[in-house]
Image: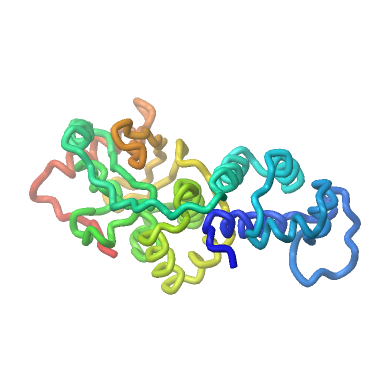
Length: 289
């Protein structure tokens, strides 16, 4: 029995990707009713010019693929750039090694000082498991009062799944949540045996059927940049650009910064939000999970 979590994840990833493909889309005849969705193992093997037995052992986590096989599978399974990177990360690490112990990240004084100086810019610092390790006043005003949430529960993905206020805050809650799950899987490709990640995934899988389904899909995405539509309870609709900046002193940490084009309605609303957040008499609408 193979105990390498990288090979296990590699096999599960391949299964998930072939299940998404329509035979007709890759030039294969339908072949009649199928017990499961997507391509059969033998069809992937033929298209990749490898034996069915070899491919079966890949999905079973029993062997390490060669670079040429990886390239063929990426082509056959029509992987995008993020999926290719994830596939190669898993394959590159598929010689067994124990998962490294990775404690919950801690922010540094300089990092906290930097984001605190962003008076009109929401920002928070996120770890690979989506743990929220630091934030500024605007970050709390935009999302939630993070300091009201116990540290062991302070995960962005956990907030999205368990806090009803998040479903109201994000206009496209499902899209935001699925992306966060895909990013979490991508950013933990080098440590699939992580105990804290497994505990978080286990808890959310029990609590929420959608999370369990989306995690099992093995989707991956890099956390880099994007746009989100928020429906804020104080200042209304916000259309914000976000960027993830890796902290050089600890590459496990990323600073998430939210901005808006100068002169736009959202830009003006952020100024209003900053005034509201700075007022000590205001009633916070933050929530806890």
